[in-house]
Amino acid sequence: VSRVKSNATSFAFVLSVVTLFAFYPASRHRIARRYPNTMCGSPCFFVTALLSISAWQLLSPFERIHFSFLQMIILVVSPCIQWWLQRFKQIITGPWDIAHIAT
Image (cartoon, rainbow, N blue to C red):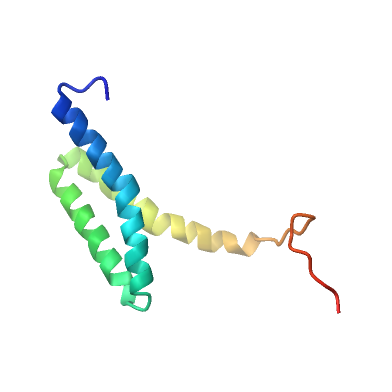
């Protein structure tokens, strides 16, 4: 924050970071808990889509390409890779597991 030009810019930067990384995830979790059976978690989906569209409007054409690429990786490629890797999943047991009483 020391390289920004003014105190107002510094304050805006810190405020946006706190909003994005502290308040948004907590409120998103609360909304998802309150409306568990909605399709696609529609309130959360709506807020996320709105923020993505807003960010898209503020970017230059070069940044839009990177933004789209990163969103495609996060929203499409990563879940597909996780789904594909499930076949290699193994259950590891050890002394850290909960004790099971044999009957």
